[in-house]
Image (cartoon, rainbow, N blue to C red; front, side, top):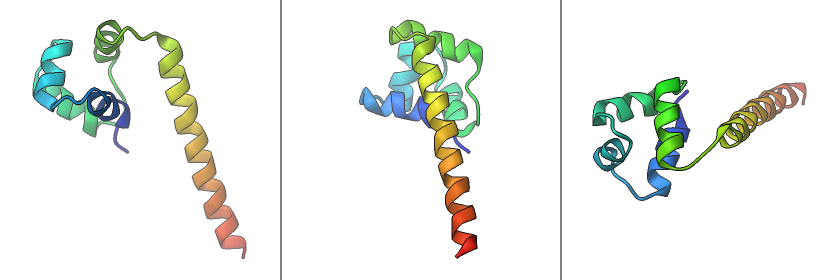
Amino acid sequence: MQNNLVRDMRMAHGLTVREFAKRIGVTPATVTSAENAEFITQKLKAKVMLVFDLDDTFFDFVEQRKRLEKYEYEMEAINGTQD
């Protein structure tokens, strides 16, 4: 599973990987790695929070949404096999 949060944040601001990396003070490879990882590191999370003026509420919301989507997907799979 990819960490769409990093990609979504970058794309929502209309930034390339290089631009996003420069803005948060990391290498483009770090951004690419984060976009392809399942979890965002605490260090990268802190940088994103600082630069984009976010707090843990935002990340909690995203995590809850991911859990809900996973649950809905699992329920669809269960219901699809019961037909």
